[in-house]
Length: 297
Picture (cartoon, rainbow, N blue to C red):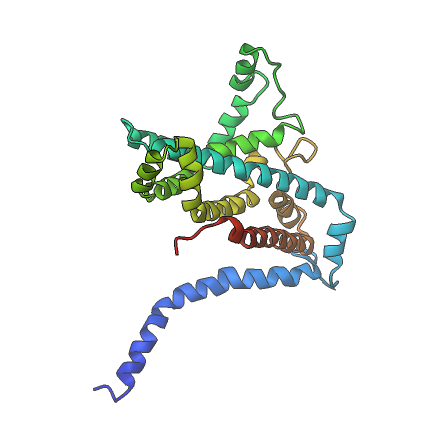
């Protein structure tokens, strides 16, 4: 028989034993790499040549003041994030608003719009996108039909980033579903009261729908922002980082220095600067939310 207190101790210990595999996984595959990446960022570390010693903040200063390619990558990443994020949110909200109506076959359309977000930036999608935006591709053929000059989408510093932004905007399915769920939770009585007062559909959307779903807009904005910062596949497969580093995003530059050049110290320092930039933008977004996000309580 169990002694007094043993049953209570076993009852307390059992949940932690069940959580132990998860805790080990977090410590081994999350916490340890984070700590080691910060340690590498302060050292001249090469996995083959070995650790050449502690160099303090030299990696950071070299990136910030003596490495122009880093700032070109920062510019390319910010352009992609700051243009792509609003486009995804606008497209997702617009389609969600339409699919919120009781239309015939609406479930089929919801599924169709969601499928691209499952595909992601894989090789097959990248090949399709290259064909669409090639010199003689369907996009340029459409431009020719309406009287516009063909555009060198994949070879132009100006337009190459937009091919990736269009791909991101096409993959708005998961964001759209979250917006759709938020729209369906808006009370119809509010719209009925607004209609009685003479408010049109646009006025109802601006004055009723938008304020009510602002918490969901904030949630989607943060998620899409983080997803855009982490973009890698599309820029690597479709535009191959070019032309002239126009799509050389920070994730790709980090990959190059970590797994091609094997300069782990510089790659780790770049990662921490990247993290600081993401944290700063996210903080600004949350601090500004008190001025435009409205909670029901």
